[in-house]
Image 1 (spheres, rainbow, N blue to C red):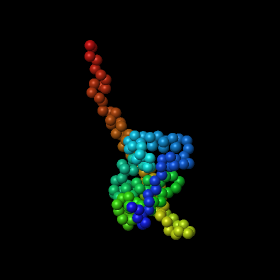
Image 2: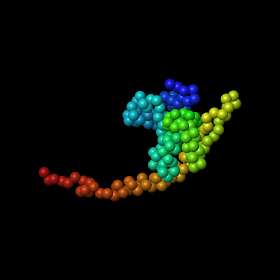
Image 3: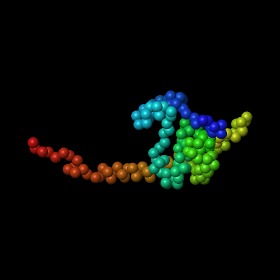
Length: 178
């Protein structure tokens, strides 16, 4: 049952979401959708998906994010459809999805803003007044970009270590002479 106080979550089908996409970006999105369909099922993915860098999860502790703050970021990312346009989901929408109160979401957003990861930007319409805020995630993106070299080094060190471990027998099959 839909409550008047709650905002409906926006769902954009994959075919509609590629509007304005051209060339390799559109092709990459289609390929990502096909791979995701194999993992999650076509019916589930047809309701939309969100691409988030794995580094966000790996850097959660380094960014100082608790589980609720990371979850709020994930909900913001789910509404961030275009790089040039900040997401603007309502606090009530996020709260309903997370089984939290809007005030709890507001506290998470305030902590994210204080950490410099998210910037709230008020949206006001002439006839309607205050609308849901926009959430500028450029601080989060900048922090991830700054941490990237450190995480890249960890990946490269792990690959080098794995490659340095020699397989028994030199990695070759022993000749049996039969």
